[in-house]
Length: 86
View 1 (cartoon, helix red, strand yellow):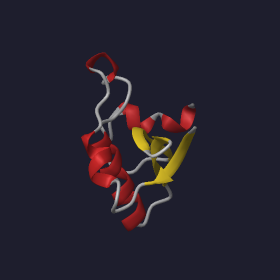
View 2: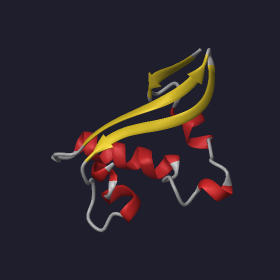
View 3: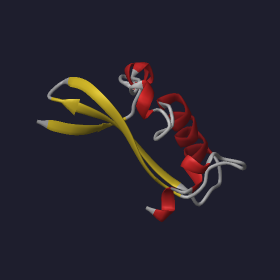
View 4: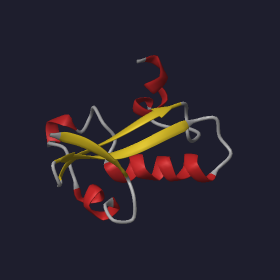
């Protein structure tokens, strides 16, 4: 069964090691960029909101996702700026 677990000190390094296939890279930001964005949102005064999660199949990490709304930095790539239009 799949379940979500908030990113924390126990799973962050494993999440940072995850990669998507090369042909998928144009569709999603890397986990390191995504987690950097989450850090900025959580530590700065911003209207954006983020919720990063590890995706687990039982106890095995199989993916990463971040639910977010709003822009987190100036000159963000279009992948990050167009997320509120989905």
